Image (cartoon, rainbow, N blue to C red; front, side):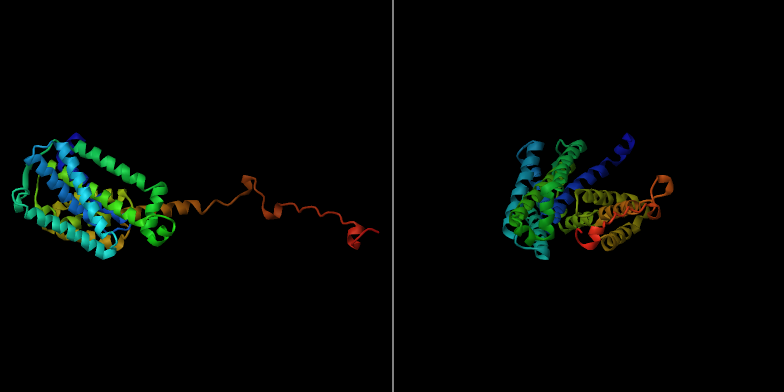
Length: 319
C-alpha cells in the first residue's frame, strides 16, 4: 500500500484538488443555479495566495485563508449582480467572469507575472492537509443534503415558485450559494497553487470549466458523492488509457460523450437506480402462505354462526 501511494501520490493529489474544484460548481447546480463562477474563484484564490506568499512573505496558511476569503467575497458580489439571471444566461455570465479573471491575470504586470504567471510559491502543504480540508468541505456539503435544509434546497431547485410560496427566500439562497461556491473554489485554487508552486493564466480558462462540468456529468450533480466519483474517473482514466498512446484523447472523448448521452444522472444516478430496482424486486414478491405455516385457506375457515331469529323479529314487533 505504501509503495502504491508513493508511486501515485501526484495522481491522488490531483484527484483531491479536482474534487474541490468540481464541488464549487456542483453545489450551485444542486440548487438549480447554473454557475461556473467557482472556476474563476479558483484563479482568484490561487493568485491571491501566490502573491501573498512570494511577494509579501505571508505564511502558507494565512495566504490560503486570505485567498479563500477574497475569492468568496468577490463571488458573493458577483451573485448580488447576476442572481436574477437563470439558465444559459447565468452560465454565460459566470463563464465570462472566469475569462475576465484570466485576462486580468495576464495583464497584471509584475504583480501577477503576466502571461508567465507566478513561480516558486511552494507552501508547507501536504496531501494529508488537503485530505483534512476536503473532509471538512465534504462533511458540510453532506449535512446540507439531508434534513429540513436539504429539503429546502431541493425545493428551490425543482420549483422556485413553490419554494417562494412556502416562505423560502429563494433570492437569499441563491446569493449564499455564490458565496459558498466562491469559498470552495478559492480554497481549491489556493491549495493547488501552493502545492504545485506555480499558477499561470492558462490554468484559468474554458478548459477548467470543461473539466469541472465533465466531472459532474460523469459522476452526477445531485450529491457530493457524484462529484467524487467523477473526479476519480476523470483523474485516473488518462492513467489507465496511457497504454493506447495516441488513441487516448479519442477514447476519452467517446467515453465522456457516451456518459452524457446514456447516463443523464451520472454514475451515481445509475447506481441508485440499480439499488432501487434490486430492493423493489426483493420487497414486492412475498412468499405465498402454505399449510406448513399453519395458515388457513379460505375454504378451511369455519362459517360464522347465524344468530337465531325470533318470531318477534320476523313479525316486526312483539306479539
